[in-house]
Image 1 (cartoon, rainbow, N blue to C red):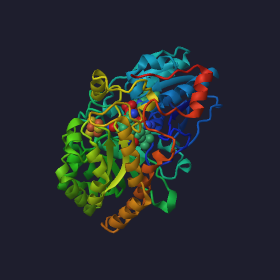
Image 2: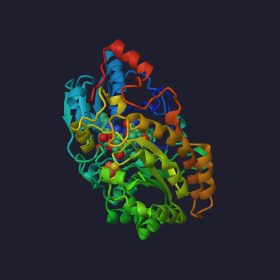
Image 3: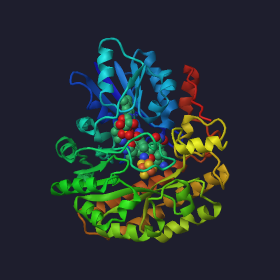
Image 4: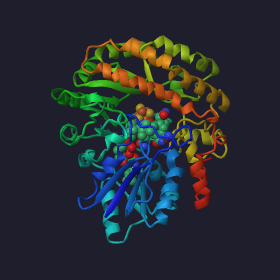
Amino acid sequence: MRVAVIATYTHPTRTRVKEPSIMQSGVPELIAGLCPPDVEVELYNEKEDDIPLDRDWDLVFFSYLHSYYEHTKVLSTLLRRRGVRTVAGGRHASFFSEDVQRWFDAVIVGEPEGAVQAAIADLKKGRLQKVYLGVDTPVEDIRPYRYDLIDFSKNRYRLPGVEASRGCPFTCNFCVLTGHEKYRYRPVPQVIADITQHMRWNKSFGGLMDKVFIFLDNNLGGNKRYLRELCEALIPYKLIWGCSLTFNILKDEELLRLMAKAGCRYIYTGLESLNPESIKAMNKGQNKLAEVEFTIHRAYDLGILVSFGLLVGTDGDTNEYLDRLPELLLNLRFFSITFVGIVSPYPETPMFQEVKAQGRLLPGTISRDYDGYTVCHRPAQLTPSEVAEHYVRLCQKVGSWKNVGRHWWHNMMRSRMPRYRGVIGISGLEIASVAHSTRNTKRRFIAGLDPIEAWDAQQMSALGVTPQVLS
Ligand code: B12
Ligand code: SF4
């Protein structure tokens, strides 16, 4: 039996470009690790490469984010016409399982462990079901990923990733996890075995990325005791790694020191805003802004690059704050921003319920618009066009080569930690990528005003695929 696992992708510019970069979905390797040994598996990540639609697969598993849904439906429809059976899974598919059944042969609701094997076994017997219900997987049952199937020649920047935990203990109002995913963490020896025995390293750039990996976790710091145990176990292996965690962990100097000793050189944290009113509106009380500057300097001194995500368009945002934001960022000096987004009311979140109940969703939004780069609702104190204008200006400022130069200049020599400079060098390219979303100068960044990708639109009309309207 021949199986493909495809993580689909559409670019924020709404043009058909690829963006091979450090961050890729780990789902293809995860699902490949669940397939029985007699199944031949191929992995594709559309962020790196086009999907060959003429292969003779028996079954295709699709993983996608909300805004890739219309595009993924097109790929599924084209494959189904050739007799290939398709299965969708992930957060969107779990939440909209009925809609998904119209476009795919089957849907897996919830986690993949167990359900993937069941779908394969049923297909072998010619009895693929419409819906498979995954249960919350005991974390001990998470299997090692098939790192051996990652093709680094398609993306020389890519880092292998591992999950130590699933879910998050916090409840930010705009987050797709809130109310849906319990926080659980895997036994440390299993995580270490995955990293030291199963992982395959990226040997590109003369070994710059060798023995470097990322944790794919939403929040590696959800339990401090666990994080300490994990770091202590990592120390002897002398690896280099990065992770995402919440701002409260950055303030724990002792823990940060331990993380640096264990090889942590990069932390991504969703700072989201430098405006206390906006933080309050997001229910993100763990972000204490008064301590931002001091905290990031201390992390840099320990040899850890702190990178932020910023969101615009929240209810606390005003024109005055957004006008001042570039200056506020400049004053921070030692920062690196790798994501600037427009806050998106994903349909399964408390934020969606709130803006919908208040009649603030823009009319006719479709899944494609829920990409974190498109205004889908009217914020309390700004018009949609004001949000879009601030967003474009901010991306261009943050992602400018002048800003990247400043980042290199300020941070290159700050720490003597092994391989710290390599991390600073590569992270400059991530910062530059913030401006990529604005490369299509026709893009308006407001739901309803931007057409979806021309190829998708053409295929949708030819195949009778309709968009999922969410407001
Ligand atoms: C790598 C990554 C990316 C990559 C790749 C995206 C991708 N295809 O997953 C890139 C760089 C493109 C990206 C971009 C963005 N991302 Co991102 N990203 C991640 C990250 C850190 C890891 C994803 C991953 O591989 N996880 C490991 C795998 C194994 O877990 P998983 O993806 O959660 O999947 C689980 C289930 O959903 C399920 N599953 C998933 N697919 C399938 C398929 C099948 C068949 C089955 C059975 C099961 C299944 O199985 C997994 C185990 O339970 C996650 C955080 C996280 N831990 O998930 C955020 C996350 C997915 N990103 C997020 C956000 C907000 C963004 C951005 C908006 C950020 C920004 N401001 O620019 C953008 C734009 C996204 C868009 N256009 O909608 C959110 C959610 C977004 C959403 N639409 O649901 C997350 C959850 C982070 C968070 N907590 O806020 N991201
Ligand atoms: S801290 Fe991050 S992962 Fe956790 S709920 Fe908030 S946005 Fe989601």
